[in-house]
Every structure is written in C-alpha cells, then in structure tokens.
Amino acid sequence: AQKVTQAQTEISVVEKEDVTLDCVYETRDTTYYLFWYKQPPSGELVFLIRRNSFDEQNEISGRYSWNFQKSTSSFNFTITASQVVDSAVYFCALSGSKRGGGADGLTFGKGTHLIIQP
Amino acid sequence: GAGVSQSPSNKVTEKGKDVELRCDPISGHTALYWYRQSLGQGLEFLIYFQGNSAPDKSGLPSDRFSAERTGGSVSTLTIQRTQQEDSAVYLCASSLEHQTSGNYEQYFGPGTRLTVT
Image (tube, rainbow over all chains, first blue to last red; front, side, top):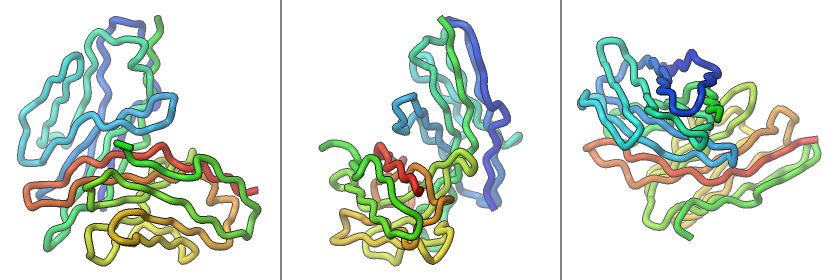
C-alpha cells in the first residue's frame, strides 16, 4: 500500500523567512510519481510540481524548490523568502503505475497548514 | 471554460436521499478522477476513468457510491441513500491520458460541498 506522511500539521513563520515542508512516502512500486499541491483559503487545489521516481534532479522555480531523495523516500518543498500570499495548506501526493499501464489515483498526505505572518 | 468545472458548488440534502454531482473536465483531457476531502479523512481517491477503459473503482467507500462518464467527457458521481458521514467536499480532477512516459499532473475543480442533514 502507498502512504504519504506530512508530519508537520502546521507551520507559522514571519514573512521573508525560509520554510521547508517535509514529505516522506512509502511505496513498493519501482516507478512512481510525486506531486505537490497548494490549497489556498479559496479551496481549489493548485498543481505545483510533478517528479518521476527515476529523476532525482532537484528543481527550482522562482522562490520554490524541491529536494527529492530516494534514499530517504523524501520529497521536501522549500519556500525561500516567504510571503503572506504563500499562506495555504500544502499537500504532498504519490501516484504509482499499474501493471500494463494506466495511471493511478493520488495518495495524499494530510497536508501542512502554512501560515505566513506579516 | 479553461478549467475543470463542477456543479453544484454546494448541496444540502436530507439523510437517505440520493444526490448527483457533476464534473466537466478540461477539454482534451481523457483521464478523470473523483476525490473527496473531509476533516477526518483528508483527501481520498474515489474513482478514475481513462478513455474507454473500465473505471478504477477501488476507492469507492461503499456500493452506495457510483459514477459514470458519458461520451468520454462529463462525469456524474451518484451517492444513494446518503448518510451523514458522506458530508465532505467532492473534488473532480482531469489530466491528459497516461502515457508510458509517466503520469500527467491532475488539475482539480473547485469541488462540491455536500452536507447531509
């Protein structure tokens, strides 16, 4: 069975601080996909990034960066110089591959509520 | 519209009644997913449609839940004999069809908030 653990239920930082959201996953699939989604107060889930299990290269997108380490089954997300607009619930998710092809539903972590204080 | 749309945005129903929730995926997306989000259970996968293949119903919590997708586009999630524990936000997502190169990201709709009284 697949599992995603986001141990940090809530994080509160002051604006301009850097913050890292942790994500640890469990899967028996050799090929799998990792995702981060943002859910602002408006409620709609916003896609941030997808990472394939065979690509461990870290990625940076503006103030966002992601650190994927297969050795520790982690896919952490860092926001640099945080802003109030970053306040949201962030979800890490995992998807496997089915035999014979076909996608899989996402297994989500419980989410981390990030609060950026001005 | 450009994104996934869902209707209604809110639904209040009495325990025991049936409800239908609708999802319009992004044009060109052949994969469609239903999830539900509740305080107690977080985000849970319910069902997945891809093209003309049989749907993956592995996440449906009981036989009171069913879904169909007509014409490979619009989908309807039906909950029969609703119970209070069915109260949740029901989210629909769509993506490009799975290719051997990997799963595509799913784009979510705004959800339908279902309240069973």
